[in-house]
Amino acid sequence: MGMGAGRRDAEAELNLPPGFRFHPTDEELVADYLCARAAGRGAPVPIIAEVDLYRFDPWELPSMALFGTREWYFFTPRDRKYPNGSRPNRAAGNGYWKATGADKPVAHKGRTAGIKKALVFYHGKPPRGVKTDWIMHEYRLADTNRSSKKKDGTLRLDDWVLCRLYNKKNEWEKMQQQQEQDKAAMATASWGETRTPESEIDNDPFPELADSSIPAYTTDAILPKEELQELELDNDWLMGINLDDLQGPGSMLPWDDSYAASFLSPVGAKTEQDIGFFF
Image (cartoon, rainbow, N blue to C red; front, side, top):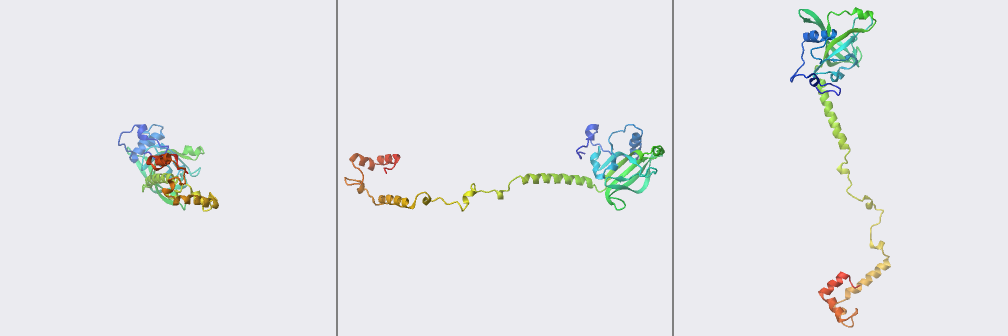
């Protein structure tokens, strides 16, 4: 259930009871489903899809079924291999179905109602096809007049046969699960590729400043050498000044008592600091 985008949810549409399983016997398939379909009557439960399965490879068919997870049922027409013969055309998709074992009669109410044939799918062209694990049981009606269709000049051998398809190793279900896992892994990988690896993130906000061709910031690049030397000389005289040089009439500064008091007091020093150094 739930496999294939276009697949119908049979339990939801047919209102099947919880725990429903479709495991009909050979007799039920022939008497209750195939005979009803050939006569144009409705089946007990419309749970079997009508598909020309000879146009497809077997692994394409499960998604076209109406019901089933490990075996799938189909009504399909069957054509002749040659216009005047009665051999069915077994070519299908990219291979062919090959009969295996003897035909088995299917009895209903004491008489033979149908014939059951087992077939195996071979991938490729005969006689070099590769045997696969896909098995089909084909049910056809026993008493069918095919001569009228031969006179019509068509290749149609049977309007309807009923087929049960399965994989003897259950590889199809495993393949679907693997595909889902691969899709999830690819989605995760594609999301990861859109992210920049942390190892490739450049932590330097301005990599162009590391270029050796750009000169480093220095004082020499701003002032000429002569002006820099003068500035250093102008600052050297402060190194030899002591407190006595700043006091008295012979000091280097204009002097009066109010100025000296404000200069030498803590409050005055703070005031001068607030308004800037006197030089």
